[in-house]
Amino acid sequence: MSSPDSERTTPAVPSTLRWAGWIITLQGVIGVIVAVVYVIREASGHHEDAISGYGSAVWFAVIGGGVLAGGIALIRGHRWGRGIGMMAQILLLPVAYALLTASHLPLLGAPVGIVALACLGLLFAPASLSWLNADSLPPDAR
Picture 1 (cartoon, rainbow, N blue to C red):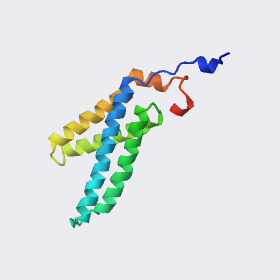
Picture 2: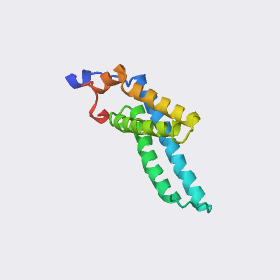
Picture 3: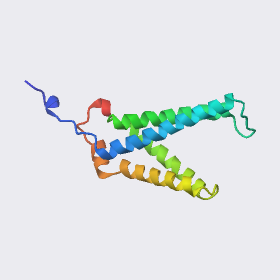
Picture 4: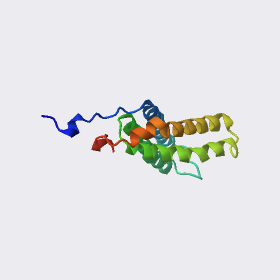
């Protein structure tokens, strides 16, 4: 005899959230790589007056690792990864703007802004929102 809970079908994670998860995961990987580069540069004797290479490496490792975890969570179907990914994209928009205007690096700023906006679009797509609001998700997806 089956219970009503076992007859519920868990909706599959929509492709919009999976794509967003892959983008967010890639952003997290880039953050971790930047942390490694800072450590290597600092260890090889490259010192700057304005920043600490090791301090920046810790910052990028923590933020990049968190974003990486959020992206993997989305790919695996956990709702909590969306909040991390959303905040990362929102924080990347001013970075893109600064690269476009103050730094005069449009070849870097434009792709950063486009990817952040596209990822936000995926996170807020109707399929993503309906899956996130589904009552039939298992507790571990919430």
